[in-house]
Length: 146
Image 1 (cartoon, rainbow, N blue to C red):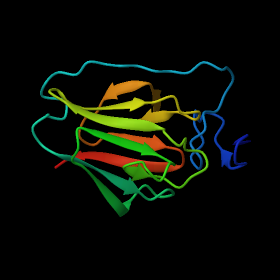
Image 2 (cartoon, rainbow, N blue to C red):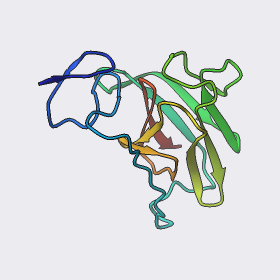
Image 3 (spheres, rainbow, N blue to C red):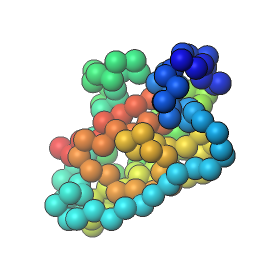
């Protein structure tokens, strides 16, 4: 076991991210980002609506809050003016945005310090699919098409 340099939690030596705070573990300063293209049937369709379900920070179970994504652009951050306000010092004031387009929904990191993660991979911008797990700071969300 090793200790997370950010929060001090014990994590297995094979872990790539801390299970408590989500910080990337290991050597190197490089970031991984990707922007895959999904087939039309895999991407979240543009016609419906969507929501982010806030997951419990420890067990990963649903139950705290649900955020409907009804606008064309939804902002996420620590700023009180954000559409989805996250009260966490590891979250930038303007952290990420979710944009609806003709293909579905896309999340984009807007220059945050600690990054935006989709399915435990740090991303700059990526199409969202039903069931994707989004992590911003210590908060985790499940993206669902409603």
